[in-house]
Image (cartoon, rainbow, N blue to C red):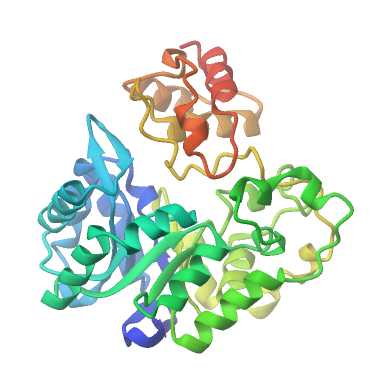
Length: 384
């Protein structure tokens, strides 16, 4: 494993990190296996955006077997658990309660990077940076309970605003070769419209994104990466906008060759996926080379593709929309419903057929997914 310094923080992190989504819905034994595989292969960096108390407890129990100085935590402020599901919050009492729960369940007395969670528009940015949430984060930093402050966003303009404040040391940002061609726009949905790509040939990084990378590099603001595989879309030739698949190693190499990028947080759902990512460290240059794939023009946009990020929550019927979409997409990709996926779907406490088409999830989705249609498709496919 190779390690990089996290911008101006001086914190040393592995090039490959673990994203929290891989721990969701897992037993303790499964979480332990993922974490042990990562640690044994040199991973020391973990992002916990999750508010799920059982998941936090599982990860905390697994981490308790390792010295605190052996791992680096990126923990999110503003991720709240209510009535059995995730909800983003800006209420000071909820932010504080959720973060105290994070410390307690992970069994740690400090978090390395305190992340201001999921800020994608200017109004929300102004709310957070002009209110009690930032003040609380600064109190945590002053007390030593967090070592530095960060922010997570999908929006290039918000990332640039954050980098310019001088308060943010780390930005968790969506990076991959498809997203990097997207034009700047305050409305994130427009980044994924088909018309954006029609007639385009991949000509490198969009100027606004290039500005972000350069700004962060010069300011010592580290970028940590989410969506490095675009939720698996780039690994599937049938769905990739380039018309052919990239390998995990190629995706990781693309991310890690962007200026200011320190680590890619991989959402590994099993030890095998951890190994597929950590293989990057020893992969020869010819396996890392992604240039031949990017030479082709994009066929279609990412608008409408679920990234399984969970921002669709909360659902009034408590449906785990992201997980339903994952099982649906996996089944459609295989042309049938494997028994293992059918069994996993059956274990969900609330099924797609319970959807009441309220549209709340669609308003929350950063990627313009027609969730209502997908719930109907899943209910028909799985029979519930």
